[in-house]
Amino acid sequence: MRTSTHQLATAALASFVAIGLAAIVLASSSAHAGVSVVTTTSDLGAIAMEVGGSDVSVTVLAPADADPHYVDPRPSYLVPLSRADLVIHNGLGLEEGWLPKLLLNARNGKILPGAAGHLDASSCGFTLLEQPHGKLDRAQGDIHGGGNPHYTTDPRVARYIAATVRDTLSSLDPDNSAGYASRYETFAKALETFAVAQRKRFDALPPERRLLVTFHRSWPYLIDWLGLTVIAEVEPKPGVSPSPGHTAKVVKALRKRAVKAVLQERHYPRKTSETVARLGGATLVAVSGQTPSGSTYLDHLKALTDALYSALSK
Image (cartoon, rainbow, N blue to C red):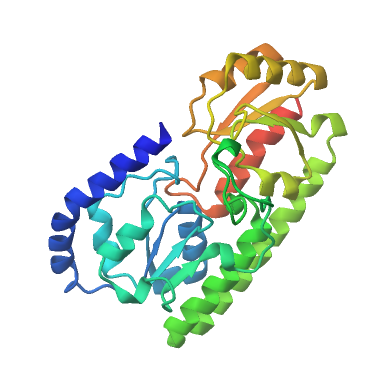
């Protein structure tokens, strides 16, 4: 199913390139204030806004509740990419099915890999989790060779990203480097304060209340940050639909350990998770995978952690 979605998205991109290039011609002459930043995900966009402030304009390509693995590469995306000064992407293969062709067809050398305006956020210096060892095999499911790509669920990681965004923006726009540095310091302190406070809150729960079931393997960074333990996943392997037999095993494990929460992003199907939660006496915590429009990065993480804490503490 996912492979066919990727193929359709690629075909759609090819058919619309001519339209997109025409839009680029119109957009290239329009003026824009400050550094023009394009991010693939809304978490990265929210982090860029915290550091850039009024000195940047930020365009986010993937909607907050879309699966960032499988985004429809709309021709309209070529317009902001064609005039961008900086592109920030998640990396680790998260956008490999749609971003490379967009970058190529945007005809903007400033944002191609290796250019000063190209930032892979996974290279910002934090420790990557779940880096596979040995030969990768499709039988293992959707495994990412460089490590798990869902790292923006950890505010400690966000601090590394924000620092690199600060440095990159300062390099591209040295006249405003003091502003980038000041906003980074404010944001970094807020991230640290929030990260420490939430860890203390979850640590105060009894050990048996710090267990959960997840749908997809999206949460290792959040789990590490909050000191939680995943006892089972609804998907038998990443990206593989659960069978009735596997679902029954998950329900059995959930009941045996009296797990209180099943965690998943809203963009994944909920039917099986709802069944698992209902039969196991748990609460399904379905949350946005990325920062929703109109929210800040920390607003998003607070909503996520509050919902999870509420379920675990029942």
